[in-house]
Image (cartoon, rainbow, N blue to C red; front, side, top):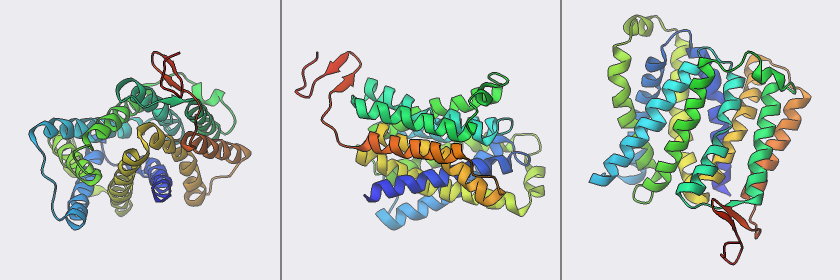
Length: 309
C-alpha cells in the first residue's frame, strides 16, 4: 500500500513542476533552469543516500554505461525538452502530451522487458489518458489541436521519448543498483552534462544575478520535491510493481496540476475536472488490479496457461 501512496504523492509533486517551470521560463534559459534544478537535486541526493545506505554505492564498469544513459535521457534531454517546451506551450497542453508516457512505456516494456499487456491494463491506460485529456481540455477537445503542432509541442513529445528511455533503462539497471543509487548517479552525471552548456549560454550570469527570490524557490521545489522525492519514489514504484503500472500514475499529474492551479492561481473547478479525475483514478485502479485475464504479447495472445493462441 505504501508504494501506491508514494506514487500518488509523486504525481502531486510533478504536477507542481509545471507551475514552477512556467514561472521560471521568463527568467532562465532551459539549460540554466535544468542545471540549477539538478544541482540542488544532486546535493540533496548525496546526503540522502549517505544517510540511508552509508555511502554512495559503487558503480561497476558495465553499470557506468547504464547510469550514463540514465543521466543523458532522464536528466539532460528530458529537462531540456521540458523547459524548452514550457517557454511556448501552456502547462495544461504540455501535461496532456506527457500523459502519453504510460502508453509509450507499456508498449516498449512489452517489446523489450517482456511485461504483459493485460486487457485490464490496456483499458486502464486508455481510461486514464482520456481522463487527463478531459481535464486539461476542460471538455473542449478541439482546443488541444487548435493551431496544429508547434516546435514547443515537439519538444514536449521529446519528453515522452526521453522518459520512456529513462524508465526502461532504470528497470534494468536497478537489478544491481538501489533506487537511490540509480537516481543519484543519473542526477550527478546529468548535472555534469548540463554544466558546460548552461554556463556558456548568453546571459547566464546576468540572469542568475537578476533572478528574484520566487525563482529560487521554484528551483528548490523542482530540485527537492520534483526530483529527489519524485524520482526516488517513482523508481521504488517501478521496482515494486513494474514500469508500465507505475507509469500510469503519471496520468494523475495533469489532474494535480489543475488542482494546484485552483489553489495557487484561483482557477475555477469545472465539471470536466471532476469527470476527468474520476476517469484517471479508475484507470489507475484497473491497471493495478490483479487479474487472471489473458495477456497480450507482441506476437499474439498468450493464454493463462502460457500457450500462444
